[in-house]
Length: 174
Image 1 (cartoon, helix red, strand yellow):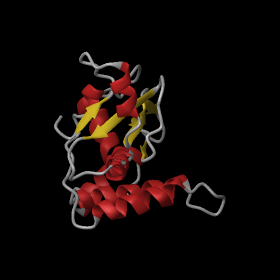
Image 2: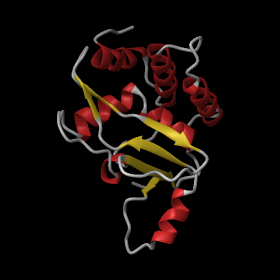
Image 3: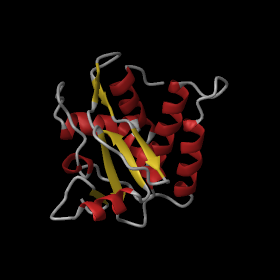
Image 4: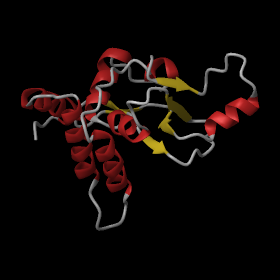
């Protein structure tokens, strides 16, 4: 892919260089992809922006943005969306059920829509709203709806396409 670089590809890189790269802002993703069976078989990509550059170990995949048109907040929102789940499940993992890993080879397969004006700023505020886990904050379904609507707008999906993705992932067009 041209928009990201994975820290897992060493290419002769020294440990010092790897640690320095890890300390940069990035997107962190659960390496083992979650397979869900209800309400429909699908996968769930779980990602978060890491603006502080925390060192990640073991079961976390790290993606650095190499294209300045994208931000870690925008990419994290896209990866957490139902649209990305549908794309990866159907076209990248070919409906696999077991042992799916979100490695660099797979991360870069997703075509990224160029953000519209204001989308990068909206992505950052969306991430902050979704990260709030206070009792009075949004439910998981409400968070997913906010993320999906944001991503559907970024990809310019019409209402029919939005209903298809929602039905595919949740068995409901709502």
